[in-house]
Length: 85
Picture 1: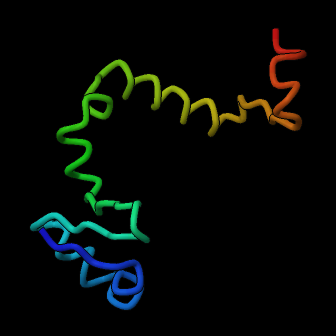
Picture 2 (picture 1 turned 60 degrees about the vertical axis):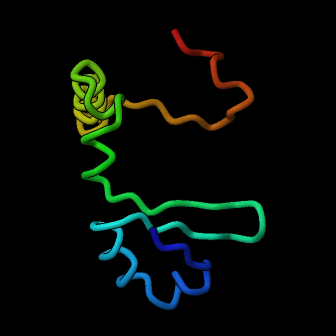
Picture 3 (picture 1 turned 180 degrees about the vertical axis):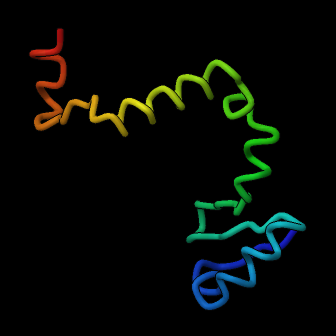
């Protein structure tokens, strides 16, 4: 595991993205916050949501709806549910 600061990450982003394919890269932000770089392929292999066939089918259906223009723009998040049938 490698632990780096946000400044170091900004200076050498490509380097740490490459390293993250082989080992854990933890980013220390301040005294209390930490983050980890995880390649998307690793998330989808182990994440229970990305490996769920029903969820993947729903996401594909949603993408098709967006591509076909079957979307509704939310103009006021406070009044989100008004007017939805």
